[in-house]
Length: 310
Length: 219
Image (cartoon, rainbow over all chains, first blue to last red):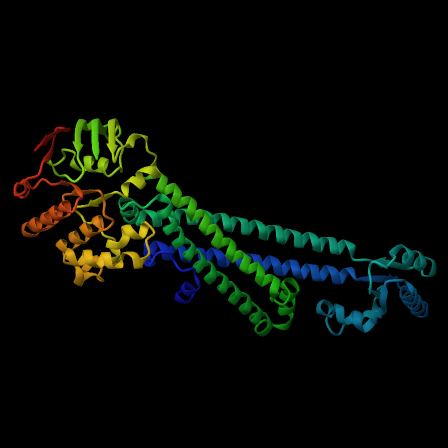
């Protein structure tokens, strides 16, 4: 805290009119630190989920699958070649390739086991089409050509899955935003009570300042300066703790969880790396809470001073 | 300097503490405010300190009708008034020097402008050696002298004292009263409330005697 104190703006008076160390002040700093930590973690989680979803969505949007219904082996090979050739001739497509039987077995192995023989089943074969430039790609033209050449083929653009993914991400972002609003509201209410308590504790100081001729504006300024410093201290501590939290979470994901679990967590949250934009968001959260503390305490202090005799 | 015209005061729906007060205080005068416990001495001092308004009548201070002044104007007028309390009311987290300098600090004066004045005044009241200690280390008499120094550092036109000798021994009480007399000789108008008549009898100053809510001015 003392290091942070040095970073804070110096008070206008040569000595602190409101005591630096008081139980109410420490309680408020702790409260702001906890609320800032919760806000930053909520913001960070929403930011990570949103980023992962955007990355997923953009990846999935650049890929589509041609499904070829099972037919005799030779005919199937011909169908696969035709589908790849038609896809590669379509503008916007960068690459088209067959998902081999062994690729399919590898994909299904987590559910059906390593010894599973896929050739025993009449499963459709898949051709993966990757788009270099989705804006040039004409889905209808490819569908028409494919239907003419290979009537057993269908195209899956993953559109439904993409919609579900976006809906899920939207729900997470909305829930996170609501949680953030609730935390900020709770912060404001807690600051109102903590500030009121601190003012009541320091009532003697307020009275003495009044008696020696200090105006309400001066007294409010002295207390507000103190509350802003407390808010900034709490905010910085809470913000720093949240950065440590994301660092520890990232370390745990990479080092402690088994590969499969880590992959699943990473699928949802990415690499737990916030990046510069995420860090900027955390800083904005800290600044927002410090400003909220300053505004809330200012209103509470002025209300307190208006209620008491001069 | 002060004019009371039919001033009355009551708290909420309670009985009138002060009734129909009429008196004048001239600049540079010294008055004792006396009366038995509960006679309204503190209430009258609160009116004079502008922390309350009369519930009836008119009060004029420094040439202005206080009934017509808003809160900020009252606070500005209060900068002309110094106050000394029986319980000292020094801020415990500040040193003697800082407590005494406080009225000048809240007026926005830089330390370079008031440092030597505060040190000089503390020497004058005999606290030069206790300048940088906190009130908890001062005796009752030293605390009261620090409180008096705080009340006069900004050179107020009017000094109010509410039982300033109530928490000190008789010998120190007399020395404190001499201190008030010295301040009065330098031009400060003083109203000093006390019920210690044996002490007040040693000084020949006019008295504002409160009894049953009314006031009697004796010279």
